[in-house]
Amino acid sequence: MNYEQPKVRKATDKEIEECITDLHMYEHKVIFKDYKERRVEIVKYIRTLIDACKSGKYVTALSNGRGLIAFGENPKGQGHIYALYTYPAFRRQGVGRQLIQAAISKLKSKFKILNLNAVKNNKAAVALYTSVGFKSVKEAKYKNISIVHMERVEK
Image (cartoon, rainbow, N blue to C red; front, side, top):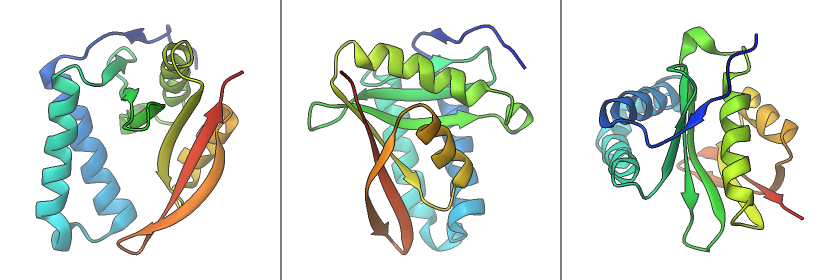
């Protein structure tokens, strides 16, 4: 399906709250399956990410109410994608691809190296990132979850 290109703009506080909370609740209930044991830690992380988005530290792009991506500069001075979320009703329709391409377009004008982290067993996400030029550079374990660090080097 073709949707109009996402508008890159600062999301509203309500949009940030909704998307980031949905993203992390989904990840931890479906992918990590240890939500109850890690609830306090998860909520703290979500709050930190939401606050960073609201403050303008990270740019947020919206795809016509279908998803959100948060990106900006990481502590190493590289472009980093912090979060990508597509609402369940719009998955597998190209929304995530539009959002990541919008982020890449913005980031590559300022940074030579772009990176992100993904849960290794989230095969759809890893495939999407690979299809837009990210390559796996290393793997790590975080609380028994395999994380893949991916990079894309701009020319």
